[in-house]
Length: 107
Length: 107
DNA sequence: TAACTATATCGCCACATGGTTATGTTTAGA
DNA sequence: TCTAAACATAACCATGTGGCGATATAGTTA
Image (cartoon, rainbow over the protein chains, first blue to last red):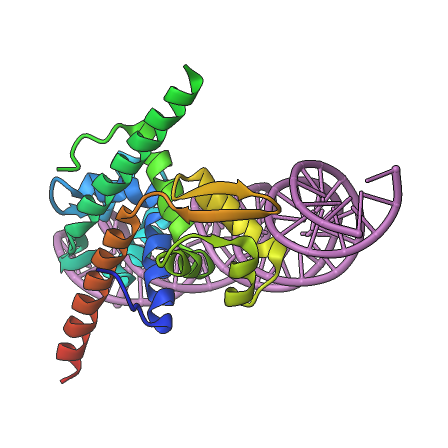
């Protein structure tokens, strides 16, 4: 399946996981799950500074998770790789398994 | 699919992605793909310090990716959640798509 | 052109993190 | 019990990173 991943690619893969390993960025992705949003929209819904949102959007875009569309004064961001959510589901499954195993040990 | 993820879980998901967002840890996972290994095995194959390997193993274990088995003086680590590799495959797919899109722009 | 709005970027600071060396702990064997 | 081996943990340092406020830039409108 995921065999024989060239050593060089490891860095690229890590970069992507790293980009997803930040609650603030995951929250942005969740917000975008329902459709494209402007920076201002996100600033409002996430309750953090505009500079902060822009920085996170920049990272997610550079890693290929988001796409940018400029329209007048606004910039719309949208999910460009929906696989993200499958990955989140997998992670959730793992967490569930881990919690189950832990609660069995506690019995 | 991955809808309605409670806000509280976001932190847990991020923790897991974060654990995978480190080349050194990904390399350990790749090495374990072929079966369980002792800490010494990994120290040798990864070419870094034993303390460093142990620290990474601790993180991967705490996040539920690895399991530990002690035998005499040795400690064997093994993959406990094979979904990791599916996730890596997804990420690789994303990278490929991104590179393709980029090379088309360069034509 | 001037003023305003939306976004990007910069400079800074506090904190997290990866790596190293040194030390502790556990287990096996003499 | 003493020593040595395998691993874990602590202490430390250098670097990376998330957050903020301030500022620059681009596009709109008057």
